[in-house]
Image 1: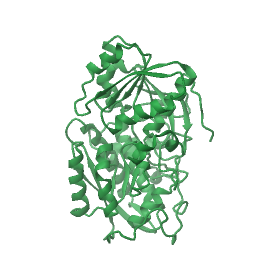
Image 2: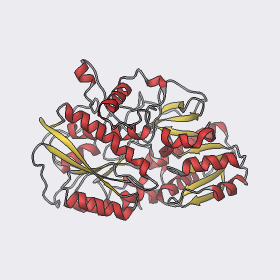
Image 3: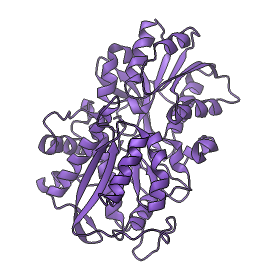
Length: 456
């Protein structure tokens, strides 16, 4: 696939958006098959041949662990309370997928069927609580693996633990560049668009459409926010695009009014929001109140209906990226994967589950790619599953994944989500429209990312 280097205005019915999202299930054939969520199109032996020892994962010093019975126990530490509790819908989506698969017999690994059990503990997005939860999940709950732990700082806080205990930390719910650090092979990131590639896509767009842009940046005062400003600044070196001012905000507070007021005074014609959750609608509202009308780029972590809807018409026209179909976009109503997603929400979800929620779609899809990894594995051991995950190639047409996109992991490329769409929000329509894509940056995250952001 040839990467598209320029962006054309207007919606294109070639792909999609969602939230922070991942994969889900594909289905064909009879009604029984249509109601069974599947993890995708991968051949279980496509990337790992049975009998071949791991080449990326060294398990020689790992403590012993084995699955007992017919249940694979997974653990997730996730904010179920506090300011970040909206992320708990990731768990909701995952449990819908697992419940649906269990109802159809479970997951098949090396010819044996297993049910999946997910144990969730609340960390309120506090990294120390994440550490406490992970120790409990590993030592008391005896989980086989961790799954979709939310937050950059939270996964940084536990990566030494999972490394020492040889516990897979699968599809950490963050697009941070640090998940490319080869010193931590037991942690693999999510198919969210890697944050550095968000900035690569924006720089390409500005180079084509506004090559002398004056840019203001508002970012969280943490590793998440730093990625946006540091990568953007490195990518515009030697160009006529300039950063005129940068402000940070406390991610525990979500109040951005003073920072936006300061940035608006620069009259910059582009604003980058390296923000997440409630800071996203807060910042957009403050931009509108200031009477400022820059082109706004919004972090891909903020594209869900739940979050963007809080901004009202202040969100109209903002740009972002996504690897997935938007459950709120009617153009996907006839898509078989979208139908499967919504059918299973109705059958297995709680009464208040929103079928147009991108966060639920992310959780559903994350669960699907986890099942894909399990079913590709030649045996049900931690090392085999981790090795298989690290070498998953040609992942496509899974769940809410953008049609035409392909994800790959290999020894040199540790990032999923490198094929995605540039999207723009329409307030009147209530969803993000595709501006261009799918854009193929496969294997390029490392090349556009300062080394300290990966290896720090």
